[in-house]
Length: 325
Image (cartoon, rainbow, N blue to C red; front, top):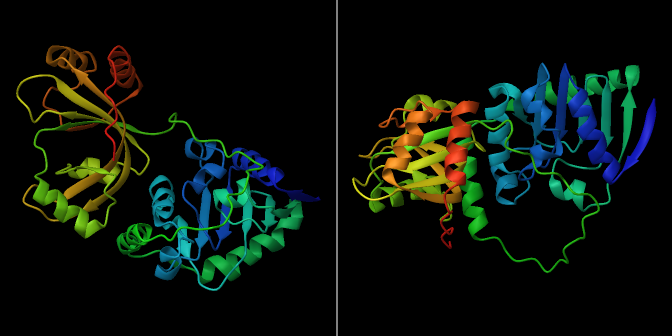
């Protein structure tokens, strides 16, 4: 069966087909935008198809021009298999394959394409997809290469964002709203900071990584946490560096992680604060005890029961105002 689709129908189709996909999720797009993963159904995190493949046009020039966001590549690599993302030069095929359905469209994997642009495509199903799968496998995937030096690409992206030129183009009115993913399938961590990073060390880390000034740093992370924590994860970060007074806790989103050699440890996180709380010291340690978290624990992935205790405790606390950037 062949069906013509346009605008909002494209997003609705990808949402539904990514829910239904069990075996195959193959995507090719020369461009890749920030938070493009939200174009798919969030079910792909809970029940990922067996065979996942992404092909993008990844090079330093595309990154600097804002056509390919390396942080989105990092998201796909960390949440799926490390070999699921490849790079290929000189192609412009926007193909979305879900088991026995294939969408061939003008829409690249960017939120702008699906929200603002007037895009169209053709949905093929059944045996009609065989030739599309063959093309994807032989002409795209088999000629593509593994994405390498992601750290360098992220540095190039961060640097390019500092010198983005303002545009005189009128902002387009969206015809489709891409729904934000919830935190239902995000891993949540508790991190206790025993020692704050000195300002000099923080400057060194940010200089080497080119992380934007808007992110905060957590240094000297343990190897297990550094290996397992993913971009987009949530973390409750408690400042235990002070011996007296209230305990400051941040609810933060993981922006990035990087290895930079310093006297205060080599493994570091960049985080974006969402909320801040201030707890009485006794109340804080009672919360940890109820959640079965050791008082001097530094990094721990929390389960549902532990998270509920933390959330319920903080819900009774008045939030601190988020500091202005």
